[in-house]
Image (tube, rainbow, N blue to C red; front, side, top):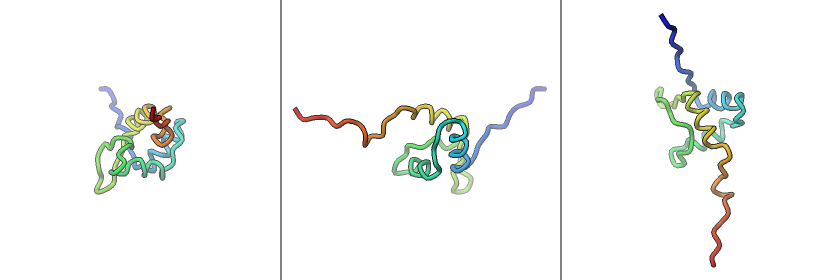
Length: 82
């Protein structure tokens, strides 16, 4: 019988600590701001436990990798009027 591994999941604070420990420095405060419904740029939520979002660590790593090298929109060059 093969042993199955439970998916690793955690709260926003745990995800921020996990990402930082794995080379993606990110504070809980920044993760909170990115995950706000009005911003919607945080990692995907696996499910909610009451009103608390729970994240899958593997999905959070994929999300962090997809953001690497992306410039914030406020730092993008503005189009010049010709």
